[in-house]
Amino acid sequence: MLIISLAKQQGHLLTPTDRRLVSALQSQPLEATFWSAAELTGPLQLHQSAATRLAQRLGFEGYPQLRDALRADYHGGDGPSQRIRGRLERHQASDVLGGFVDDELAALSDLPRHVQQGELDALAEQVLRAGEVHLFAQGNATVLVDLMSRRLQRFGMRTVQLTGSRRDIAERIARLSAGDLLLAFAFRRAPAVLGPMLDVAAEAGAHSALITDTVVWPAPRPSTIIAAPRGGSDDYLSLTVPMAISNALILTIARRAEPSLRSLDRLGTLLDRLDS
Image 1 (tube, rainbow, N blue to C red):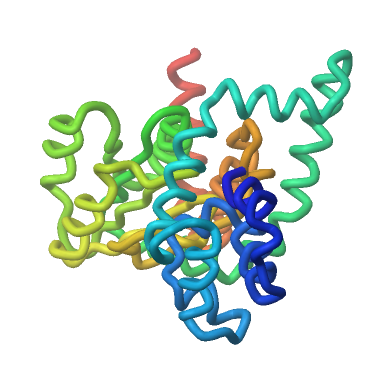
Image 2 (cartoon, rainbow, N blue to C red):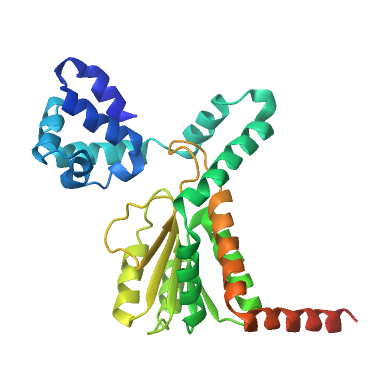
């Protein structure tokens, strides 16, 4: 991690205040790549100039240059192979399954500290009020879009899957209107297309919500953010935690809306008829 390397190289120049700032940057490496000087120094009750002095002692012109370097380091040096190697190195090679299960259980056990039932209640209410629920994700996270779309449709709700090429997404999001909901899944970094989509939602008067693994999100921000870490920031990370959030949201919707369960009963009847 760059901040650790820099601190070791310039350790003889760092003051106790500098070391507090380094610890803060080290504790949340992904979030820190988006922090302003005020967001870094504020929680420590330090003046913003402390961030500038730290950056200069580490060899940068100012704090923005340090933050850019940290961002380039985090997003450029955390490729899939590095993350997989990092996770394997923490476990015995002969017990990959056991180590994986231990890590996932730890992340799941920590989930209630980060996501409160009240947050799911509020998001469930938005889903239930929406004319259409537009679901977005890219890469591996598209499986969450498919899951949510299938579950919501079984409840009798209308969904639009915003996956595929930019043209595909543009054609589908064009129907987004006031009263709809844009529900996005994004992890580790913000997809380039998501910012403009959030702007489109705001302009249309639609609500927007994001399920992610970081509470720090660059502008534009969605109306609602539900965030929970999936494990160590430099690890190979699975979708176990966001999958749990998604399923908890589905159960919350079912609890709050009796018609949703009646739709499931009708689906069961139709399946029986088709099997006969």
